Length: 476
Ligand code: SAJ
Image 1 (cartoon, helix red, strand yellow):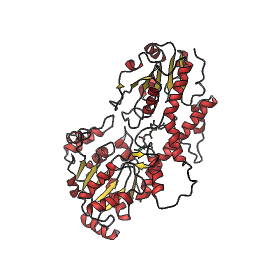
Image 2: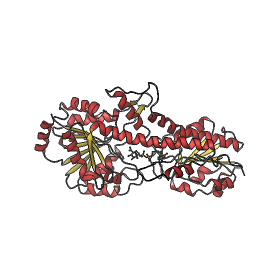
Image 3: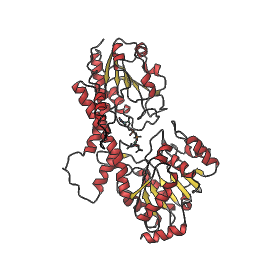
Image 4: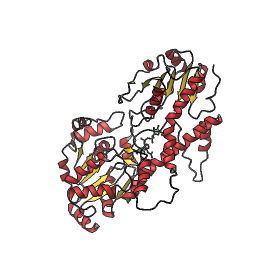
C-alpha cells in the first residue's frame, strides 16, 4: 500500500500549496505561520461564509485578525503574509482540488458527556468538503482534538466515501494535534514539540515535512495516528486531573482549618532526584474548550476501541471523577457564598452579588465554558440579583457583562472573584466597602487574589477556596 503512495508523492514533489480549514484560534495562526515559510508557495484559509463567522473572510483578506484579545505578533504576521500575497481566505472549497496539504482545525465539543456522545457535525462537514475536492497525492491532517480512533476510523471513511480515493494508497492522512493557548498562539506553535501521527509511515513522513519548517525550538515527535490522538487527549486529561487533585485538597484544607497554599508550597518544595511535584492551583472551576471535554474524548476512545478494558464495571475512571471534582468547584463557590451571607446575617434571596471575571482563564477574553456561568445560574435560582464584570470579555449570550467595576459593585452585598485577571489583585478593601455601601459585606475569593486580612479588617465576611485558615474568622 505505502509504496504506491510513496511513488505518487515522490512524483508530486515537495508540499507547496497548503489549505487550512477553520479560521479560528488554531487555524488562523497556523495558516499565517505556514504562509510565512519560504518553502511554501501559498496558503488558502477556508471559512464557511456563515452569518456567524463569514465576516472573518474579508477581515483576513484585508490583513486584519478577527481574533479578539492580545495575540503577540499575530496582527503583524497576518498583514505581512497577506500583503506578500502568500495568504488568502476563501469560502470556495472547490479550490481544495489544487492543494498539496490541507489541515482541519474545527471545534469538537461534546453533545452529551455522560453518554460520551461528541458533536462531530462541524468536523464531519469539514472532512466531507475536503473529500469532495481531494486530489491524488494530497495530505490531509486533523489538528482538532478528537476521540482516539477518529483519524483511522471516521475521517478515513468519510474521505474515501467522498473522494473515491483510498487513504494510504492515493492520499496521505494524519493527526497533528494543536497545543495552543490563547494569548500565546504563535509562540506555542513554534516552540512546543509537535506530535505528528500518520495512518502509515508514508503519511507520517509527509506530515513531518509539513510541520517541520514552522517549528523554531519545538521538534517533531512522529508516532501513529491513534497514539497521537491518545497523547493529546491524555495531556489535557492529566492536567485536569492535576487541577482536580489540588481542588480536592483545597476542600480538605477548608474542612481542616488550614491554608492550602501553605500545603502546596510545602509539597512543591520536595524536589531533586527526579522528583517532580506538578502541583497546580485550586480555584473556582475549570473552563475553556479543552480540559472540559478532552477527558471524554479519551474515555470514548477506549469505549469504541476493539480491545477489552479490564476495569470494574460502573466505576468512574479517575479521569471522569476528576471532571466531576472540577465541575463541583462553581457549586462550592455558591455554597461558600450562601454560608458567608448567613454569617453576615443575610439570606440569599434578595441579596446582590457582583461577579468579577467571566473569562475562563486570566487576562484573556476567551469565555468558552466559563466556570462563572454555573455559579451565576445557582445564584439566580437562589433568588440573588447578579451583576457581572470582566475587563476583557466583550459579550456573552444572555449575560450583561460590564467593563465598569464601579457600576457592578455599587450596592452589592457580595463580591465574588471567579477569574484571576491582573486588575483584581489590586482590589482595595476600603474602596470596595465604600462602593458596596452595605453594613455587612461578603467577599468570596475563587482565585486567591486578595489579601484576606485586609478585607476582614474592613468588616467583610471573607471566604476563599482552600483558605480554611481564614474562612471561619471572627467578624469585625
Ligand atoms: N486552571 C486551574 N488551576 C490551574 C490551571 C488552570 O483552575 O492550576 C483552570 C483555568 O482557570 C481554566 C482551566 O483550568 O479555567 C484551563 O486552563 P488551562 O491553563 O489548562 O488553559 P487551556 O485549557 O486553554 O489550555 C490547555 C493546555 N493544555 C495543557 O497544558 C496540557 C494547552 O497547552 C492546550 O493547548 C489547550 O488546553 C488545548 O487547546 O488543548
